[in-house]
Amino acid sequence: MELQQYYSDLYRIDYKGTRQPKAKHVFRAARCAKQRLDFLIQSGVRPGSLLDVGAGGGEFVAMAHRAGFDASGLEPNEGYAEYARSEHGARVRTGNLTDGVGRFHVLTLFHVLEHLRSPLEVFRQLHALIEPDGRLFIEVPWALSGAISPANRYFKAHLFYFDADTLAAAASGYFDVLAVDTTENLRMLLAPKTSPQPLTLPPPGYATLSRRKLVDHGWIHYLTSGLGWLKPAKIIQRWWRESRIQALKGKDILALF
Image (cartoon, rainbow, N blue to C red):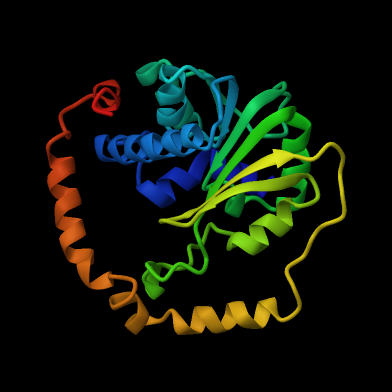
């Protein structure tokens, strides 16, 4: 109940300082939505009924609908859900996975799983919502990324962190992995099993190896191999792009993509 109340009322204020997305937030969300749609389509996922869990301001739902999906969303924060409906015309309900929502061919969760109390229970719930030939698309922060500043690797609202092996293990009771992408964050496309199975855990010694990787991914690695030295230039580039869209409405920003 405490988590549900936090994400309904306070999370967006803590994370973005606003109850509804600003123009820059819409622009960033639209860029990510375009990349995610490309990943889905390039992975051979055909348009069908789609539910985006944790839909935010509705950018992905609106753009998926435009791409031919029968798209809808669930968003716990009323301010963001209302913005999705009023600005983008997206079918986004205020609610959570525990609400009755039907069955879908495609389920998506973008930076949601790391916030939830029991990932194993989430995969059970998702399995009950997906069609037998459906696809689950999950994106989470990649715990072992060398491109993350050590100062920003952990966020107070994240209860869990995943790499490809631990995310696959958490899903393995109900889903099989079809594709993995770690270009930036960790993206995983999964197919439902016909029936629940025992978890498939990472091999012995995996935790020790992961700890060693995290230690190795310190400031020197971030600034060199992780290209952290380019971060100031990227910030300036992002500021320049976003300064050009500040006066646009959300629906006009989506039209740019």
